[in-house]
Length: 124
Image 1 (spheres, helix red, strand yellow):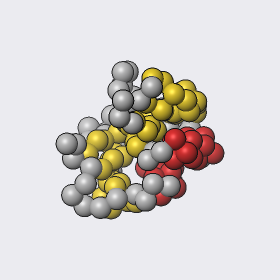
Image 2: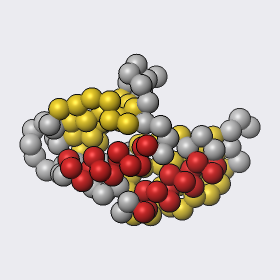
Image 3: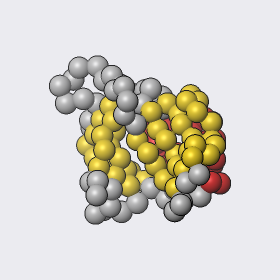
Image 4: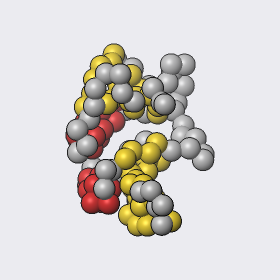
């Protein structure tokens, strides 16, 4: 359903180091890009996450009430992604845990303050 989601950064090298390592945990990598934007995913034609320096060259700022949700594949996968993100310098925004009977999630803020949710959802 989604093609890609874009989040801003003020430091492309730092953001790439963070996402290269973090997203490798789920088999994703940098697929393509140019100086101001990089696209991550598992393969072309699938949904992607893009990090970019804003086109208008104004400072990036994080939105309020939005986040990126990355499937962990399992509860263990959620825990692994959360721990890797924290190890890479992300800040905790809600430790791993069951939020409702069908949803297990963990929340962090990346190095630029963007909110990320790692989740596993099961059928009721």
